[in-house]
Image (cartoon, rainbow, N blue to C red; front, side):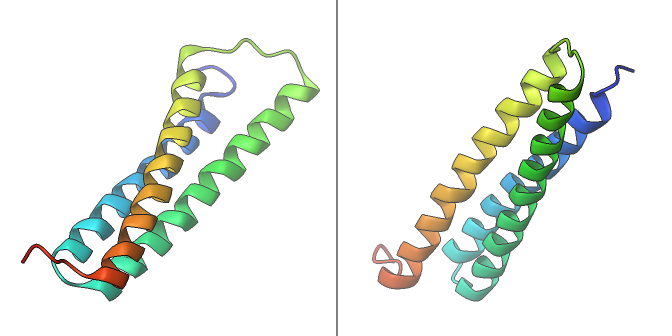
Length: 105
């Protein structure tokens, strides 16, 4: 196991949790439970912050020693950025559902 694999896995774990919570929150809102959805997106935002902090710590370590960037780290960075986009967009969608409701039903 490389030196930075654990940190990379932590980033993947928390960003994955964020994305899953965001999509679950959207399903809740689409199902009519706005409050549960809002709680879910709050949880997603908490998880993405944890992932971002783990990423920042890892970047700090890179300034202190020579690092060979590996595929797992690249995957972790991709994971956190795509999860951030999902959390942000789903948060906006939940606000729209809350404001305008579901006019299709």
